[in-house]
Amino acid sequence: MRNWTALLLLVLGLLSGCGPAVRADPGEVVYDVGGGLPMGSVQAVGAGHPVVVRLSQSVASYYALEARPLPGYGRWVQRLGTGATAIYVSQRVNAQGQVEASIEMRWTFAVRADGFGSVRLETLASEQIDIGAVEGPAFARLDRDFRRVASAR
Image (cartoon, rainbow, N blue to C red; front, side):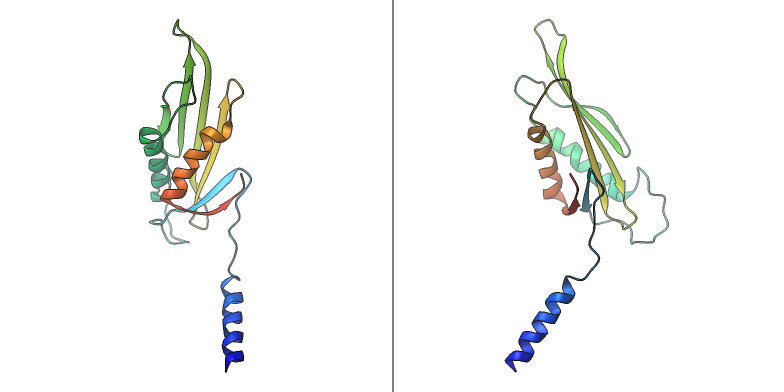
């Protein structure tokens, strides 16, 4: 009886790991956002899609409530926030009010064919910075709000 139970547990364990693995494309982080449409549903997958809206709102709330600029830089300001694209900028300004350095974070949100949310982030800086110090906390927010399914970053 014990052998049958052990065998049954082994088979169930193997079967649970046999589902299709979700893979991320290079530079992509994939999230299970929930509240999306079922796979195969017919709707334009654009900026107004519930998955895109939820991802972009999560990032927007991160910058509004949590984001901290690097030392010497000013607060993060949204330069673009339309649909599936958002750009946030932080600048270091000298005493004369001239911009000495800037950091730009370009977010792109999409819905994959499998219904999961896709997030891509490109960080541009006019000087060498610790990219992890600005990207890490932002992705940590997304990880708190949604379940990360795959990543290729």
